[in-house]
Image: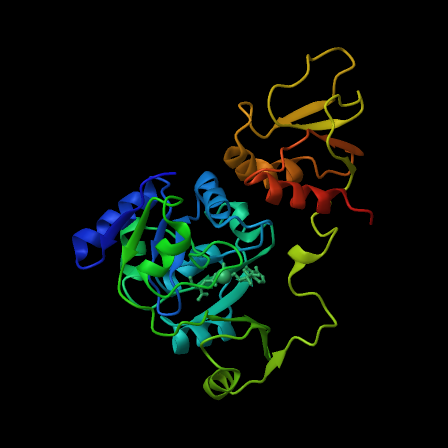
Length: 321
Ligand code: TXA
Ligand code: MG
């Protein structure tokens, strides 16, 4: 347990303090107009892994990245004309846009769960000023333990996260109490991915294009597809002694490099730290996702804390396809 500080978000000095804490990799709950978010520097993998750890989330689903506005959004994503109109009309506000991720985006892959798209929004209130001081985006899902109600006050945040996060920035009550609407602009229409504080008819009226609801025939949350994350080669889990023709994803000390040892080793965390391992997992899988790598072995990862989400992700990588 750590001591969770409460920072009344009353002036510029307080907003700078929150930015300063985020830049050090701290986890800070922040107010938005929808619900309180649990923020971490979106470029810092260990900090983003800390979000999953603090929330007790059993899997790495993609998170919303919060930006100051259109200018910052363009550093992370391709903003086409339709996306531009939605931004113009609804930001700052409770509309999240899923957009193509830029190849050079300064974003840790845990934020997007390795997807080629990123969910962006610019919230109302003091958060954009905090982000302007920070100079980059934060990832921020709702600031509650997994499976609990989304919090609308600092006191609600403390109810489930006290002692698990570094600070709560108290900016008063969130007015909507319901999460942002998530949409994906698709040129001639908008796909509704999650209903929320902005209604479909408000969006249709603003842009003069139809909003289509997901009909269930296609899977929109690729993270839920069992083999979505699978690399080219076959993946074996729970392996302490990798074969000579395997590429090895290690956790903790690697068994003596004998002549018959694995072809190559990607170390998730030499010291067996689950937060470090979580922050390196996507890089490990993409490094070994190559046409000439046929067999990948992965060390056993304990099923505690972040280990649950890491093992969920690895099980998808190893699933039959
Ligand atoms: O109101 C809100 O949106 C709150 C406040 C704190 O801003 N945030 C929030 O964040 O609800 P989060 O991380 O809990 O919401 C993430 C949702 C998930 O349902 C996830 O599947 C979806 O956004 N999402 C994120 N990135 C996505 C992507 N690239 N493609 C599709 N869905 C995505
Ligand atoms: Mg939530």
